Image 1 (cartoon, one colour):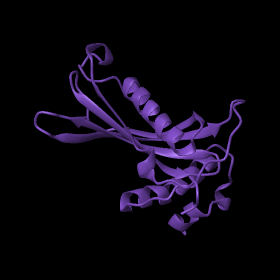
Image 2 (cartoon, rainbow, N blue to C red):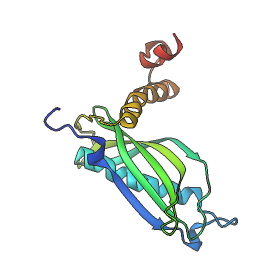
Image 3 (cartoon, rainbow, N blue to C red):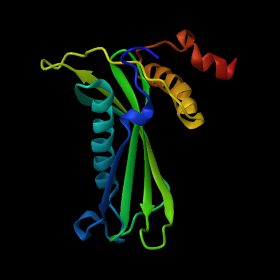
Image 4 (spheres, rainbow, N blue to C red):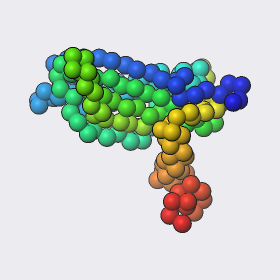
Length: 171
């Protein structure tokens, strides 16, 4: 492993909170924006742990809402860096509804964020390599490059014919 390289476990951030009445919609479930904010914070901490520098949110690449989180529910957000590029990182967030009494945990949401490490003048800085360990971490690491290429194509920063990873999927 490279001298400054890190594993996803070294970036792991867990935030646990109870959903309060002012954080819910008319149906008594947590506002999506409230959850996105919590996910963004957890992802930022994971990115800071990896880069050891100030970070800024570059994009929210994907969020899925699979299961509502009710008022009074215990929500757990777990964030880990899934891939590091030269100055940017992809952070994968998993969200659970946790019942501390019954010990039941329901995977309710997931999201993928991109952060950039910056210096005090807000200029991008180099970050360490990420070395995935588990099968899930390796799968997320590999998929991150495809997601990055797709994002670059959709934003017009890369031509589809220049994509290496996406060509593998469709060729």
